Length: 237
Length: 225
Image (tube, one colour):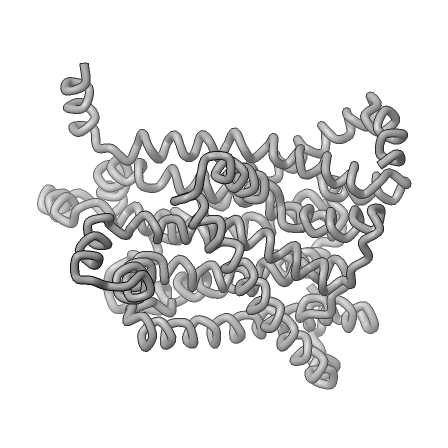
């Protein structure tokens, strides 16, 4: 305890705090980049998975296998596989790129299921009406299904992104200079483990808590259909 | 890319990987069981407890679910020796995972507690059921039906994501074994490809087991895929 009190002023000095802030931003940036790119690819994956017809069966199987397999492999194993695979292909790829690619691969598998759930929540009659009006499959998805599926997709997608902020801690293992790596380094410099990892945990909390509140808020707001919200406003003076 | 895969080394050391897989499975089961006890307590307090205890459980859940499991385990691993508590690597991992899983399971189990309607318990009381009978015939089926899929899913998360963190504090479970073995001969890609496959097989076995268990014991149709 005395050790923590004695180290605290030195630990919370300017340079340390700037470095902590920088690494927190790196954590956030990595997660956002990975999740956004992954989200985009997941749409493509779901679109491919929903291709009708017998000839597309292998395509559908590949998509389903991808999702199932990546949900069952630990993130750390994916990171190592990506790291060593990328380094055999292009030896001078930066660690940040490697981390983003690993996050991307993982995010695609997880968000594909969220997106599929959202798209399937739209009543089939809407799709049939679109087909009756001779819209193509892409048009149907973009103009009819997606606008109605957003409220179902967005809240769990945000929840996933928040959970991924925490999972990126594992990327420290390959040497990306993010929060966990910084924490290990400070610990190696001789600062008390309780102090260092308590602070790092608090940094993660600061990153993830507001976002998870936002997710919960959106879930509540988007869960009520538009008509229902209106009637409520009328009935409650 | 001129990399030649050589899986021969991996098959030579396959028994060691299997040992790691067995340890992974044990750690997963124990962490989940411990987490379930913590979660059951937490959910019961969150639903029926007085407000100071509720606040305590809420704080615990919010803090644990918003920080990485790795940091929690590092906190136990690097922090506690300063207070004089020296635990083995496995103990640190297990306690960290139990605390972590406990918070998530509190949330999942609470959803199950809420799904039981008060009127149904009252109906049970009217029929003269004892408390145990009420739990056995009214509460349990409700909880099982509403949250069994979520529970089964979370078990896989603990088994895969949870235990693999142990590799970073020197527990020789599946990932740890792979890191140890591949740092001997640098066959990282081969080892981790095989290990990824082993994780897939391991979780499929667990999923099928859980689905069968759910069908026989709780009469829930759980999905395997």
